[in-house]
Image 1 (tube, helix red, strand yellow):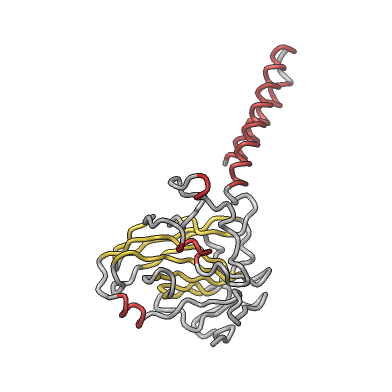
Image 2: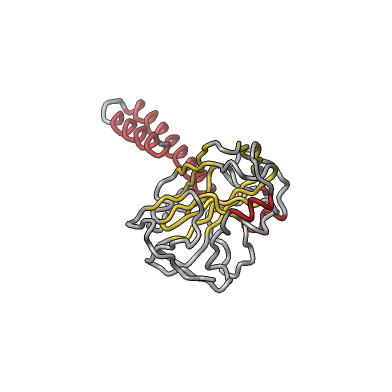
Amino acid sequence: MAYRTAINSVESATSSIHHHTNAATAVVYNKLARTTMHFNTVFSVLLSCGLAAAHMQMSWPYPMRSPLDPQNKGSDKDFDMSNPLSPSGSDFPCKGYHKNTPWRATAEYQAGESYNMTVAGAATHSGGSCQLSLSYDEGKTFKVIKSMVGGCPLDFKYDFTVPSDVANGHALFAWSWFNLVGNREMYMNCANVEVSGGSGTKQSFENIYPDMFVANVGNGCSTVEGKHTVFAHPGKQVTYAGGLDASSPPFPNCS
């Protein structure tokens, strides 16, 4: 929008040049210069946030170290938030931020209620497959509450329901993504959230819900470019796209 506004201002200024005296023309040129400077400033901000020509990142709930979170200042912001995890697995999970970021909930969830999460960025890599997961043990285990098999993140907003049998308290909410086209990578952002109203315990939640799928992080499991990742254990909430459905065989087959 800022780009379109800047362009409209430039066009208006250029048109005015043909209808004014030399003195007025100088004013118009000054306006043009200021407009161009404004556009450059806005574009620089977009670049600094990694949104002008970036991969994808979770934009809501705000993940730890998000450059989009207005409460994060200076060194608290990761301007490479949209980058994938290291192929060595050295920053798995959550880019390691769950270990060194002070806990602050950016969202509060009530069990049984529906919410949405959003992503931002430009390089969707023709989609892929994503999962939404919760961890109650500081990132040691992540359990899937929803899977988007195929076509993710081609939409920028995804609805989900917090299950009624979740545990209550502090949790990590994770968005993970396996891109269809490009390098074999795993993307993962994590947010601190507070969950209430659940009927389960941490142990029962871990027993009922499947593990988050993990690949491309030095764990011996890799996805294949151009072939959709189909989760063997997608959980209770599942959506399909990209020609996939519930009958699509799991891929890759990783133990």
